[in-house]
Image (cartoon, rainbow, N blue to C red; front, side, top):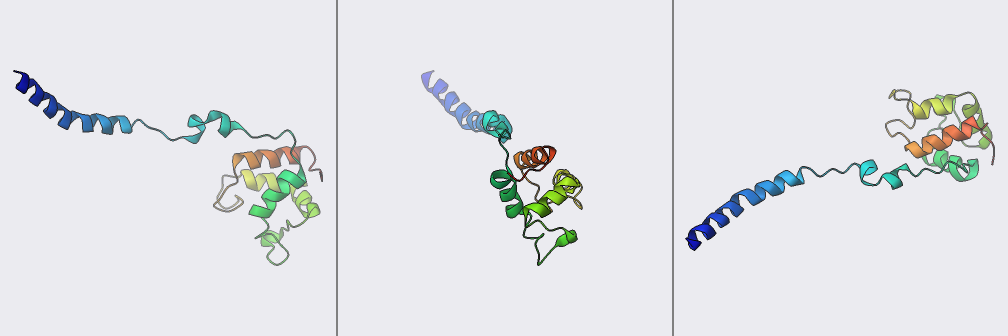
Length: 130
């Protein structure tokens, strides 16, 4: 009797343990915002400045296409005055928040939400040179 129970247990283990493992593995999710809600929501916009927050984003994502040698769309973004001009007329926020692939900047690679929030707040506060 004992041998029969042991045999059934081994048969059960060989068959059902892999199935249970596969089913439980399928329940795993890797949504960053859900896994790390505190880290994902941390976007400090309280002290947003042009020098520390806005200009580095523009230099890293925009200047390669909007410079003196390659002014795509006749837009230059190499100085504060040029960036402020595009911010004041609304084009800066319009292109970084657009969902239209023809208008969205940078093309095919939207800015992170935190950078968009910082730029929007900076523009709303008058785009100061701080």
